Structure formats: structure tokens, C-alpha cells
Length: 222
Ligand code: CA
Image 1 (cartoon, rainbow, N blue to C red):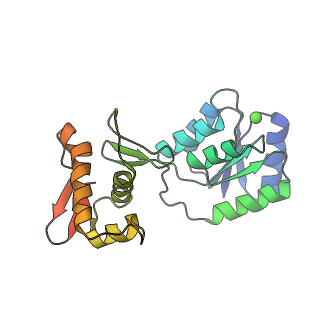
Image 2 (image 1 turned 90 degrees about the vertical axis):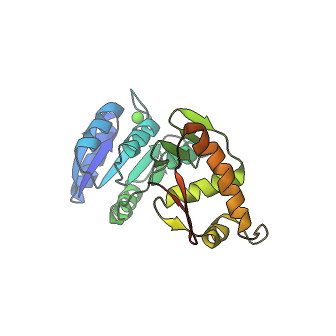
């Protein structure tokens, strides 16, 4: 197992490196965000311990850039303050866990153990299908560089499409996943929303990304 520690305070970096090496990990240390992005893009780490406060780009940026490059290793962020916005932001840019400074080294060890046990599947923080991008945290959608404004239900349907690209999704499945019991209607309502979505995400761009599969439902082209 190989870890990357991203920390600009030399004393802390050395402490972490020593502790994790005692636990049997290979441990690389980087002191800047840009070097960390480069190294974690080039090498296969089993987990990254990432300080938010770095001298160049911050830890949020490092995390976001790694996820954009499809690097899905677990990332644990170290935050300086017990600040809820920092923790929320960290998780929204794709971090798996966080720890507030000052922390106990034993707790950090335990959390890293738990993280490296997880299977790093694809867990993008921002969904992308073709040039269509959807950010569930910021609740924004764009095609290419053009922002698209969607109402809540339209957004929910597109998000469901984008989490299951190239799959045929039945009207019943949409009703089950996008509508709650109170709001559920008949399957015509799905057709209505798909028509609205096409008007917003396809027609202005001359694309046909949502296919109708006769008798089965709809499919978002991958
Ligand atoms: Ca720092």
C-alpha cells in the first residue's frame, strides 16, 4: 500500500511519514499542490492525505483536479478549522473523509486503514456525458461552455440519466427514482419532462442525446 502525504509544514509531514511507515505503508510526501497533482496523476496511490492550506493551490483544488483527471483513490482532507463549510466543500469536490487539526495520529491511522479497504470505483463528484456536465453539489448544468437552466424536476431526471448513461430507463423506473410517493403521477408525466429536457439540452445545440426506445423508455447516449 502506498500513500501520498501532501503537507507543506515539514515537521508535520515528517511525523506523518514516520507514523505511516511504521504501519508498513510506502509514503511519499509533497509540499505543494501542483506537485501533488502531478505525482498522484503519474503514480498509483492507495490513498492521499491532503492538507487544505498549501502554498500554491489549496487542497480543494488538488482534490478537484485529481477527480477531473479520473484519479479515484481515496482522499482524506486535513482541515485547520472546525469549519462546516470547509468540510462540506471538501466532500463536494470529491474527498472521502476529513479530519480537523489538531487530530490524534491514532485516529488518522485508523481512518486511513478504513479508506484503503474501500474499493476505488468510479465516484466522480461532477457527472459528465459527452460535453454535458452536471454538478450535483452546485446544482448546475452546462453543455460545452453554455450554462443551462433547469427546474428541480428536470434537473433530477437529467441527473438520473447521467448516473446511468447508455442504459434504457423505463418510465416506471423514473417514477420510482425521481418522484416521491406524494408527487407520483402517471407515466405521461415522464414524457412531458423528457420533452422539456430535449428542448433545453439538445435542440438549441443541434444534438439528440436522449433517445426514445419504443416500448421500453429512454436512453441517454454515452
Ligand atoms: Ca499547511
